[in-house]
Every structure is written in C-alpha cells, then in structure tokens.
Length: 249
Image (cartoon, rainbow, N blue to C red; front, side, top):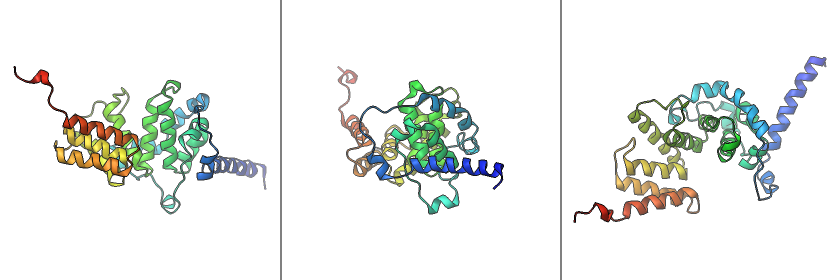
C-alpha cells in the first residue's frame, strides 16, 4: 500500500475507532460512575465552526422541526439503528460525539451532545450551538430533538435564531406540529409541550380537554420523568380557582 493510501486508511480507522468507542451500548453506560459530569471545554469550542458549516444543518436549521424530521437520515441508517452514547460521554468527549452525529448519522449522539452543551451553557462559546445540534437530531430522525428545538424557538429568544423575526402565528403553528410529532411517537416532553399549546392556544385552538389529554399522556409515558411533573403543574394551574384579587368586591 502506498504512503498516501496508508495515511487515508489510518484516518478512517481512527474515526471508526472513535465512533465505536462511543457506541458500545448498555455496557458502556454501566462503566460510568455517578457524580459530577466533566465537560471538555476545549473540544467543545472546536466543534462550533464545523457544526455551523455542516450541510445538513444549513438545510435544517432555518426550517420548522416538524418539516425536517428524519429528512437527513440516510437509507442505510434505517436498517442499522444507532446507539446513544449518553450525555456524560458527549460532555467528556464532544469531538468524538460530533463525529458520530455528523459523519455517522447518529441522531441520538446529536441529541446527547446538545444536552451536554445545554447543561454546560456557561462553558460554551455560542449557546445557539445546542439549538443547532437539536435541529440535527430532529433531522436525523430523533423526535425528542424536534421537541427540544421547538422549545428553544419558543423560549430562547436568541438573536441569531432564524425564527426570531418570523410571524408569530406561523411559528406557533410550527411548534405545535413539532410537539405533536414527538408526542405521537411517545415522547413525554412532546406531549407535555403539546398540552401547553392547547392550554394557551398557541398554534392550535385553546381546548382544555385536549390539553388535559396531552398532559395525561405525558405521565402515562413516564410518570417519573420531569415532563410529567411539568404536566401536573399545568393541570394544577388549570384547576386552581380564580385569583381572589380579580373577584368583584
């Protein structure tokens, strides 16, 4: 083998080794001891530029999450489901997780890397990168990424977000569709956020019965998850008596 070919083969094997090291599945998770998550700030900083130039991101980030779902998932990935590397590993090894996300079309890796960025936002040069990673997770076929990207659009107010100046009615309709997409695939947060949309009339007609049904679904999916706690608070607010200060004397 010629020297250039040996160098190319070496780079391919190195990338494959990194991907496999993160994708070992349940056994890899069992090795991780509980405690403080170590975040590799230096590697995270190096991801920003290639992330913002990623072709799949450039196609997906300006679009409604519901409209991009699984659009960037290659045919071969449909036959070989990716394994999640865990948020802890993505925090410790963001560069390797980014390889999984972009080169290996591992949408759960995009999601876990986004979680790591979100939970260490003070150590990330551009907080909007987590939104970009959630967008890639959604476009790669991981429905929870669609909900988190939609929630970021709703709550983030980021100056550089493409949705910042979009018409409110169009954005609300997009968000409701994105939450529904995740809820229909048994995403607890998708159902919780869809319930809120129905409660407040954001992108859908305000309907208390549909809001309650979505909140109930969030808890039916996982009663111990944070989404259920959020749903229960929403229901409690719906059931609370009117503020006495608003009552006539």
